[in-house]
Image (cartoon, rainbow over the protein chains, first blue to last red):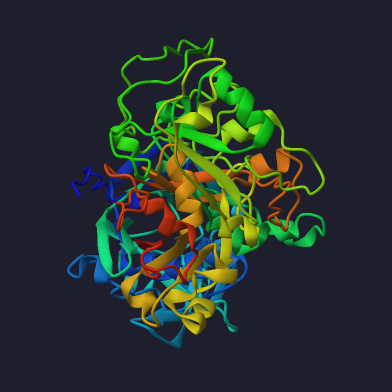
Length: 199
Length: 371
């Protein structure tokens, strides 16, 4: 049978914009580029569509992030963790940093044994941009992420799906990743990540 | 995300090619990612957070938009008036063969003059070109250029409806439904193949070539609603593995999810459905199957239509609205069949799964999505 050509592979894509905001509120775009949608997105969505994971759609939402200090894109979509994520609440700024933090299990290459710190993205900062795109806004205010070990710059960020397997305790999986140019975070400025995922 | 559609008849793979994932899929996922978790604290709304509301829930079958102005949908007035009385659908076989199935691709002219008042008019005898429209990501129904039915221009679902059989017992068959089609009753519906429609006043049964009775498995198990949406009958991959890939028949004649144990590594999820011979007969008489679509729930549309979560499928009065997420077109009618041993090929489709050529009188469609 002759086949009509219908080879349209709908990719989930993403775009990350990073802005620096000084004490006077002036904004400077310091990064603006695509991201990498990693294999964890496929894992999460396959749990959803096979009805094999959580029964609640909330567990499939991308509601948490990690920052890191050793960004690289060597492994492309095969990445399942940041190269060197911030390893403690203190590095995120603790309570003073105004980031709601949680420690939960992270799925790494299929294994789920390691507890890691995550920053939570308030639902009010998850917005519908258009019919098929969602923006995640992550704010590091002037009190956040000023205590990174050895004063290392942050240069990688990951977006995570909450708990696609629907297990307890929560197991989160990396779905999108991007390395970026070094940012040595200080109390002089805030940093805003505007991460748009196109489904 | 991508998809491959495999169509199997008997032991032969008659189709294996890519589909198109539509913007509707992205829209459903964006809905999933932005629905407020706080709904969990509202008793009347918490069911909206059920994950199944954001996954594939139905499949439908269709043909080219202009096919709804031809075939069993659009017969001359003197024929439709008889159909309204006896509820036996009729098609004119456009071949010289004395015994033949209804070959939809042999139909080259319209059989009825119709003016939809929507910028489309067709005339009896005017050339008819059968070709479904190509897929484009922005499609929201199987045929965007669907202009309704000849006697129901406002009916714009875009695919084969299921209005021939009255789902609610005890009510008379409206004249309208017999020509809207497209699937027979569970206890059998008659179809006639004529060599000519004759003229007004003539006994059209004088042109009788072949007739039969087809039964619908979809309507027997009540898995298809009036608008032609077939629901999910096996709703998880685990259940699908327990029943096996061949489960999409009999009482599970609906859409069935199937995935291997390693689905989280491969990202592959299949939706399998069997279309019985009886259903293929009627779909063929009404113009064949040239397009299929996978649908997720349109939550806003369903709520606006009076449905409440959890969204329960009701074959007789389904309030659920759906959003098209994937589409596949074919250049050959899936209901096509050849005559066998001097008998109309449709005769062998009538016997459900145990006919003379028992393993060829139904169709298996396996739609594999990869995330």
